[in-house]
Image: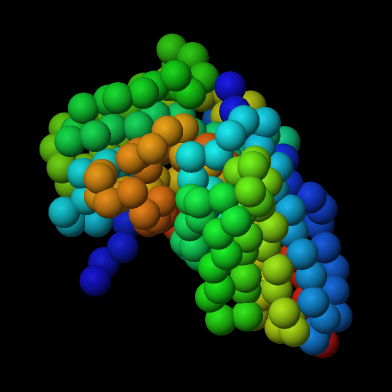
Length: 112
Length: 115
């Protein structure tokens, strides 16, 4: 079965700093999805990547899918306290499905 | 618009008791997912419904767990009998199949504590 490993597991950064979260899959990705979870709440969809080399941005968050489609990175520029939460990557089991498995998550804290 | 609605938000029960978690998906969505989140195992997919039919229940831990979707606007996840290791946050999510956006809409979760 497919597994997603995220690194680091947790991250504490000062406001204004840049940071990167990585997600590595044990199998080729049909689609890679990034979600954010605020403490005590459900997950919120950030973006989806499908093509090797694809890059997408949402506000100050940029995600990339590598050419071999087995790794993705999420980069936050000039972090803010509002970026704090748990970031999870998700993978589709095949094309044209919304059935996702998720990585273990990266817990981000941003202090002033 | 109302999002995915889950109830109860918090449940504390004793080992051996029956627990029923409820979910109302977003109107018009035809896929529904139940996930379980723990510190140790992260977010695990338990079961997936499409058009009210269970498509994949390979993630259901054991026979103590059962899920139903009697209609497009309601689903339940039942644990009977409950055990302390079932303590977790249970999430329900819904989506529109075929959109291939990967965008699942999650409820706020039901936090279950089994003593």
